[in-house]
Image (cartoon, rainbow, N blue to C red; front, top):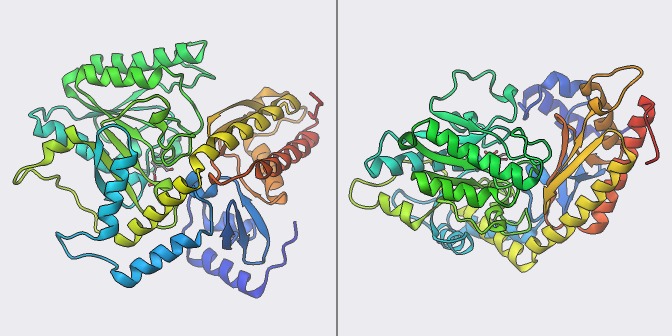
Length: 459
Ligand SMILES: Cc1ncc(COP(=O)(O)O)c(C=O)c1O
């Protein structure tokens, strides 16, 4: 595709290529691709680049722009707060930060009611882990420090949480040694249950029981917490999983941490992912949708029972980030939550998400490369697997991914295949018409790639 770069675009791309360290790519690779796309405006699910070309950002940032781009009400709330006060003296707080804590206590389930604000999802999980260990320490069980997470989960990039889960061995190969005391349970993926469960229920029960076994085998009195995402990258556990996890944690005196960084604020069609199963965790980590990525903010929210162990002179939680409780981010977050509530974006996530999933399932029939589709609300996954087909001229998975990603670019989608699945986490304001546009572009891309590979078929 020929995009004629304006002088300004060339200048910006040069600046990025010469000096910017971008996420998960290096500058020589970016240069080979003609430099990074520089986006300048956004509205809803679409962004416009510096040459005026419009793109659909299928994942709304990192499944994080829940209300969509371009909500000027948030800009206005930020501007107003900037004009009032931009930070706070030590041992004080501000109106938006106090009101945000109150709001989060209101909308999170059960007795979750004490809010530690941070700057993003990784910090939220770091904070949740520290609270869990400090909680046990204060209860006279300092040896309870092991943390259980599930293989295939992702909980962040900072030094501690980097070692939770295990989505991508490459993301931590440079940072060994691993933190001690981290234990790994199987992931309850009903499409390929590693414990042989043949139905979502069977898989859920087996994988939850594996957590129980892990706790028992590792001496229950040394286990601090289990951390899990309600829906991880579109993998939806069977309905039994979360309630059993809750029961197991209660039985062993282990805290249950729900990482709601992706699933929080409506993405699964409920305000929080755990609301799908009526489970109340002891600690909830929040990020992304808490502010739809307009500014950096996250939070760790704990139940009253947990929080009560941090009261009394000298007993406070020893933990501070300079930007925790930033009033400007808090003002943006309050306005963002107001939009989610006033515009029924949680209901829209369920309705349009269900439609989106059905349309993706329609692609399975026609496209030999496409595998199972999973997900809940607006966090969906569609597998693409070249090992499903026999190729006359075998190509690597990477080569096929590259071809497919080039086709997405040609059809103005910001969407890329990494690994073996396409993940869809669009803004919650997406419409069925937007979905049709996206699915049509994916369909065309698959036809083109499968045509090149000589495996195109009519289902
Ligand atoms: C489930 C989950 N937890 C935590 C994080 C880390 O959040 P952040 O990138 O804001 O630090 C992510 C990021 O993608 C995530 O998906």
